[in-house]
Each structure stands twice: as C-alpha cells, then as structure tokens.
Length: 73
Image (cartoon, rainbow, N blue to C red; front, side, top):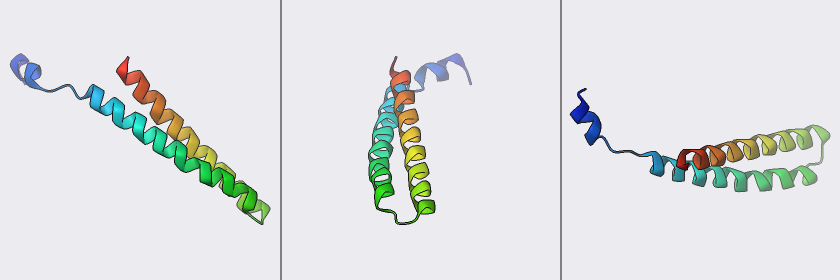
C-alpha cells in the first residue's frame, strides 16, 4: 500500500464512536429489566443468576459507551 492509498482511505472513527455509544446505551437499557427481574425470581439461585447477568450486561454497556466516548476525543 502506497502513501497515496493511505490518504484516500476514509476515517471511520466518528462513525465507530457513535455506534459504540448507541450499543452501550442499548445494552445498559437492556440490563435494567434483567436487574429488576431479580426481585421477582422465586428461587435464590435464579435471583443470583439474574443479578449477575444484569450486572454483566450493565458492565458491557458502560464499557462500550466509554469506549465510544474515548474514540471521539
């Protein structure tokens, strides 16, 4: 690849950052019903699984969002 080819390749950093932020928000919102379902689970094991799954989804969502914010700066 020559230097002329590198000049012509588009920079998708802004597009990728917006995608990461939107995906992070989606995962964060998706984690809320899972965390709320913890209180309606009848068995303690199910409550633990719901809580852990919700925390993982929330953590992934926050990670994606922060990664997207970092790409824009």
